[in-house]
Image (cartoon, rainbow, N blue to C red; front, side, top):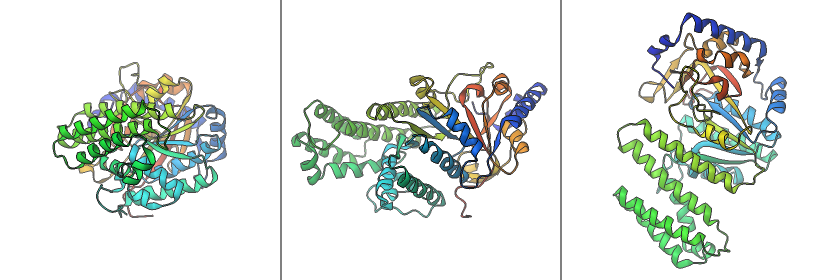
Length: 425
């Protein structure tokens, strides 16, 4: 659970400092320094080969979305994990946006990236080639992923989240329900035309309730079509899934923009992640192996509190849901950051700000151990024994306690980071 900075001192006692010192010593004796010269250092690779090869899911968590170094960290691990057969990447972005990324990886056409809502695209406008530094960095990451796809053709990319800008989904509907699409994809053209008319009507309706009714009616007809013998080149179950995600994305957008702030909105969002991920997994090859990218606070192996009753998050998470569905098949790696500059969450007005390691936190210990180079270490008995005394920081500002002995299997500490919205190379 996260707390305001001024409360962190309440967590820190003389005993806690002593416990944290023991944790720090155990990490110093068992960690691996990563020089970050374009590939993971061999000792880290060997740990992955031993601990990860037989796991179905690998979590690559991040404490913050808005620092440049996260892309380098992810790419280093992704390349090694691809060698071990983990070819399906699922990221904390919307389903529609994730499919735009996959289309780019397959074709190299950057217009597909420019059609993603997270990159600034809004339905009804031309593909948006954003000059926002965040988007520039993300695209650079995707270009590097595409280079990896040339070496590992089975690499795929998708989203397990709702779309923050749901209108992007209309692009797919326009394609499917065009005259050409109706002829190509649908045996029952009458019902398909009804779906098209309902989706088309939903674009211009101002009343959110009526808009939802139109989409729900379309979903009902799609469900009817899934019961028929369909032989055309269209996965109707996928269309049903895609339309349901679109509907839920609209509802979440309404909750966070039109209603009073409530963490309940984010609890609801997380349950939708369960549904999305469950649907994706049900339609993939059972032998597929996955890499999940996202906040540490989503990608934890357990939601259990520590023995003092502190939970890292106040709601059940997608990471714990996956772990419960696939016991012994998950390996979670969390990244932690020491100091630097970032933007968004944790900064006044979501702007840009600097942060330093907070005394009494694990990050403060780690930056003393390795002030210049990243540090990789696995969970150990000392961490588990003293987890009540461990505090890590979310978004550079919010101290959090939790069951650190169980939430992650390994940690990758980056001493200093740069704001992803910075124009500096």
